[in-house]
Length: 189
Ligand code: GRF
Image (cartoon, rainbow, N blue to C red; front, side):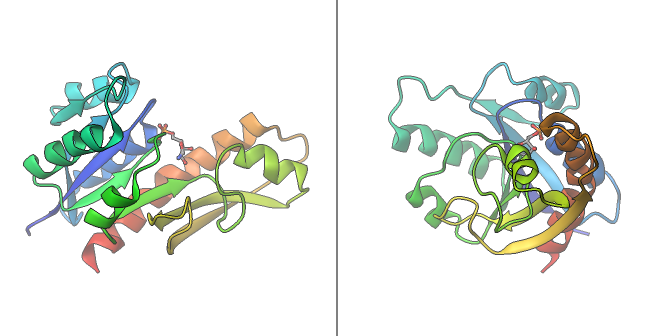
């Protein structure tokens, strides 16, 4: 089976990236991870990727104009043969031009039940609203922040006494189950 090559962009811990890599090792998984790239040269996830013999690319955007920075990322992804981009805790906004170049081929995981709570502080906002559940969503990336088609979601109940941290930890475990499944369906469609 020829696997679809995925490039993963991270900025930090990279636990979702690790879940995607682990899942990709199964023979029946329709994608493989061609490259892990980061805007943070000291991202923990980047060290893990290197140790796991995955091609990595890192470039700090400091002092670079956004088009030059994104051209470098784009070049690294293409050189690695990436056909799809999976954002996994990548904390920079992609320009409209970059999104247009990869139209329909960038996915992201967001820690809320979209369309609720786009942007940051999703868990605190769910708690403040008195929601019975939080969760996570995998969606297609468009020019609108956290606004593209939702491909899959997992709901996580909010328990009495939950804080943003305890809820985030429970949602993160759900993210690690959801993202590989949804990415596999997405690349196969
Ligand atoms: C996750 O909660 C993800 O939903 C959000 O950023 C966090 C990244 O965590 N986009 P990690 O780097 O994958 O551990």
